[in-house]
Amino acid sequence: HRGIEVGQVFYLGTKYSEAMRATFLGAHGRERPIEMGCYGIGITRTVAAAIEQHHDDAGIVWPAPLAPYGAHVVPVSVEDAKLRETAEQLAAALDAAGVDPLLDDRDERPGVKFKDADLIGLPVRLTVGARALARGCVELKPRGAREAAEVPVGEAAARAAALVGPR
Image (cartoon, rainbow, N blue to C red; front, side, top):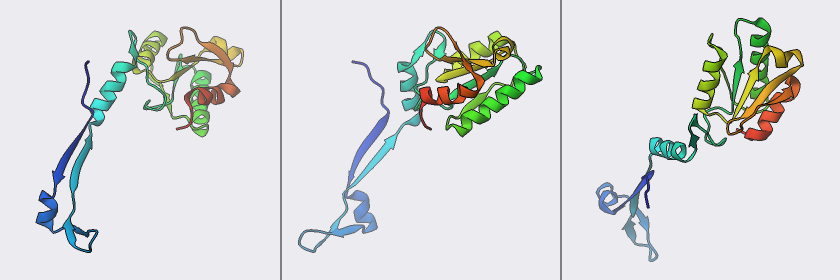
């Protein structure tokens, strides 16, 4: 079996408590030195272990409870004021619904943004594009899904929150 060390436990005994005169009253009312231990969690190793277990060929697939953000909001173009404003409103609605949003407001091509979104691996991607928005919708795509689904703009934050769960 292979493993990764994510924490340590060391028994220190009474070495330090005796030096500090740290005591407690024992069963018969006598002072006794405290038995001590040292405990640590390797956060970076824990994150590395989670990523090792949750990834695919495109990048990380964060489990919602570990994800740094709950949803990735991707406006196809930040030059288009309507798309940008809708993305900003959607990010605010997600925040109000208890989902931490990451708004990709970079002036990049959509393909670059989608590739980066998959690489980062947040649980849900919400894409604000002109065609879907003309129908009053945005695209919602869970990170592990093959296809995105169109959802009404007004329902998108609640639908994402239902997938991601509370903060």
